[in-house]
Image (cartoon, rainbow, N blue to C red; front, top):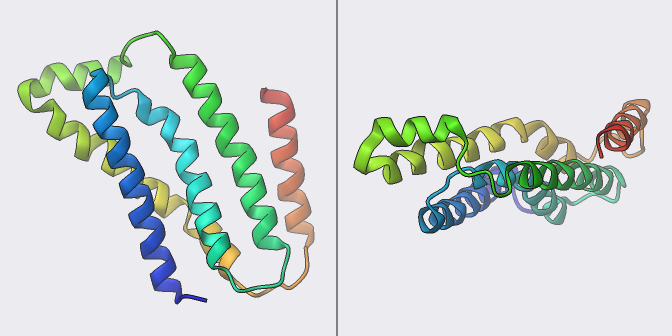
Length: 157
């Protein structure tokens, strides 16, 4: 297994690359609203990268990756469908107007990179849980989390 620091830095680099690619697409289509669809996908990327670097025989890292995937894909699909064909989100339109000719640069840092950093920080507990060798078995908290994700999925699809 790689060291904890290496895994965390690799995950940060992965979401920074993902968001940079999203930013490049946003420049082509002149719409940064696509960042919303990338939000859930970033957590999925982090979960699976962490899983592949975990060195445990526990089912917990797999369960976490699966639940994050269900949640992240559902969120990405929901936001993509909600935003499809509606133009740029008003909050980004306002920033575009205020920034003038340098919005392309502002959008990179204020929208895409900032959200990548938030995503990585928010996912730290997930990364630590997947990389931990303890507990070796599923706990009541695991079952509660699984139930919560299942209920959320059932009632929001």
